[in-house]
Length: 482
Image (cartoon, rainbow, N blue to C red; front, side, top):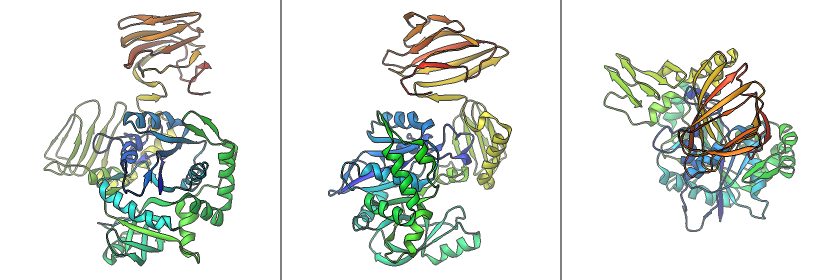
């Protein structure tokens, strides 16, 4: 029996602003331990969970903007991927899983697909793996399996699954799905908790690829048709699979729940099953959930970075660049980054999205970017700026290179701080080592490469009448950017 993890990594995570941004969302952040949420997800199954099950390399679905962060984070943990599927536009989870299923059966296999969002946290991987083994037995027989989290409080932020008849009572229990319930009010959530026959809907699914394709064809044929076209006309670019934009853009947008799982429950064949999951699961959907899943001090405070709390309890205080001190504060979220500070009541954590909405209305970049901006070749960070100049710290990864480009309105001065750079300027190519510098005039064709085995760090001073990032004319680019 073959199982392929399908990792959906296209979320935005706006409720964890200012750490999570549009171009660097929460799946790429570490919220507990040394690994990011994406890396935790990639490592969750380990090398083997059952002697009869072969775990194939993961297939990740994400958008164009995040493709190199996905690849880089997988490489950091030495985790080989089956591929990275690039969605030209967001169309929710059902089309993403459908394209993954079509790619999974291309070689004639019909593997089990374990669909996991990249931005969830599961503390007890051993119990999760046991639940997957239990679900795999059902999925092998044609069931569409979901995992229902055993609730420990009356949560109003999750959908619920009502348990039907028992399929198996040994641990972990398995049931027929009786009904999906929308996010309830507090009184209803309390009743669900007291009843004991309800589970939180985790958004994790397991089924054979062919079973999913049959189900999506039965209940949502337009999605299947559009995805077939997007995969058939896709372009392979190394580890990337670029779905055809026209076909995928024409695809209806729908979730796995609405497109298939809820219709399955009311269908006469009723192939829906739920495996109970008690493994320390969280969707890490807000700052209050960060408090829930994190280690706390004697005062119930969660801290990270250079922080000090005096006479305060049950706070979340995160400092990335400077000392953050809190005096006499309870139940607050205080988050400091290089370009923003947010202070919020912990019980208003779900409303952080309102701040992001305001930033969007104002057209402010803080909703999308950190001061450090990640690129396929590495990253850059603004250090200073003023009229007609700005200063950046640039890091180029080993073996990486910027595009061959030119600027109409700015000149650049590069000073290498560490490592080695190969510089192309006009018809000249030369090496720069530590403490050496060069000047790139306005209009000169140029490129920066790192031929070494360690990151190349340099300071760039830009000067000119216009310093926007859109003043770039690319002639060659190894990353196929426009």
